[in-house]
Image (cartoon, rainbow, N blue to C red):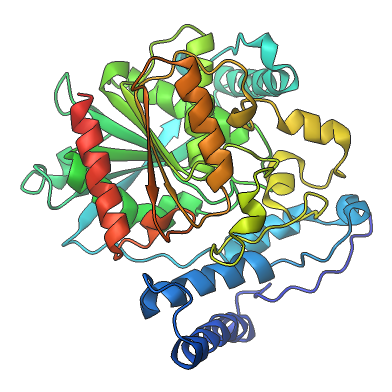
Length: 422
């Protein structure tokens, strides 16, 4: 098949020319930010120069690294295997984790026969069918002696009670005592970026610091190479693996941001419907609960957030890439996207949720979708089940700006919430 030729602004080969191309891509954004900041003043007075620079680099990355001028009809002619390699080559910069902040170790999780699963959730229709196809494939691989695996980060803060412990012991996958509590965190990144959770190491360290718990983060498969529900299935299997190592459901706090927040809710719905014991609590930071992006805030907050507001007819819309890359958008796809495992906000039954903390920025595009989701959870569960915190002037997943006062307040609130639901 002949693929459409694409004009890409980041490197397609890891050579000197490609690196210069990426340096200029970032430098041009920094220079434009410096000029606007000192000539016109800050866009939001609560943001310092560092905040502006990082916000604008993220905005440029998400808005301009892929050609968002392609028509819906071109979708089947785009080589998304190549796009997956391109995204991996140009992943967001990672901040090295300094020993003074935390330390981590990456483990391998093998999906053996003991942890294979059958999703008895036929009411989710096509999503259920896809989950069971993946589960059956994993079962076959395990039975033939070639089990699939993913990696998982284990991280602790050096400012937690584990600071003086032997790292070889503390960074293992098993419980340090029979009733140890942990945070199982699903990273965000529109299901497409965040390879090996490296973009979130400082977020994990802050959460470990304020909760006093170890943080486990499975590195689920990424889109567009792996479409829905690969990510949800990997997270479910990682949860089963953690249980098989000796952790108890009541000692696990599920957490996630953006796409990871949607994965948390999807997990909770599957666990509830399969009559499994739910984790003790859930923390959602800017959860992407509506893959159709239908809230008014997608228009209202365009000026402030770093996420671009793209039409669903764009083949490179994150929803399109994670759900079924290369397939043309249609009314049938829109209906599929309203499955609660894809877009929890469309769930008609959100009963049985554990205590839940939801944090969002006032200025983020997802604001109205999150607000609607929280209202539904409140309606379907007992009083006090869900707590919504809205942080003024903050964009999407503002905890990534961990130097900001709002982010530090959010981390402290997560710590208090987790201890409260011990």
